[in-house]
Image 1 (cartoon, rainbow, N blue to C red):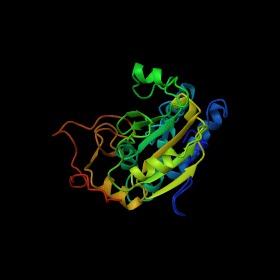
Image 2: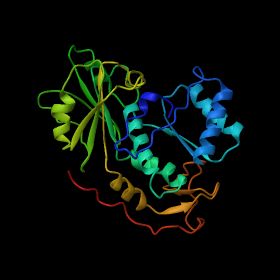
Image 3: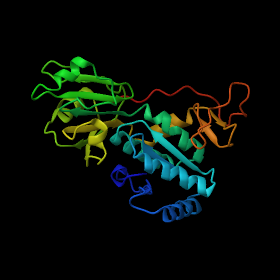
Image 4: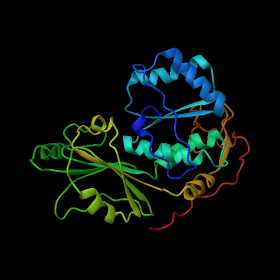
Length: 287
């Protein structure tokens, strides 16, 4: 992980923590390369997950370290989720790392699991929001004193202005937990309105990630993310997808792209024999 505040506490005593890949300003290149080499020696493979809004210098550092080590055992996964959604995804991958999946499957599972994370925020203004489409009319409403907006960035962008008769954004149709991070916006709307509307099974709180105000364009926010908390359900989702070997690097993968080398899966008829039979994605349990 690229930031300590994106490493959520484990959900149980078995879930491992995540290693921190320091930014260039916090660690010189040689020690960073040494730390990555040590991780490879200890664990065999490294899956580095980082948000799309990361400092470009930090991203270049990780690619440079991988290049110097000349290792095909390092997966660099740029995730286009809000910061709290990235933190949730990383914890889910940490949970799956203990299952009987190969490193390639765990890395490529990130794209699958991201579709089951409903990540958004309650904002006091969308004037500087550039991650979700905002109409000119909505921009104008941002200047009305006291206005608040519910924004869902993933899996499908939604934006509504909060009002007495306003329905919350459409949420998951299966049982989830809701993680809430309070910024400088004082509001109970997420807990009192959104959580019941989404029929969440539990609500937990955490600190607001440091990069969230920049991602959302304001520090007056309450960030939230709903997710599948049960590792057995996560396991079922991943195990139900056909596996194949990457035609470029040979790593095992699910979906349409290798998590380690980013090569697209081979066209039909050119893939190697699948290691598990194909199944459709299972129905998720209700609330």
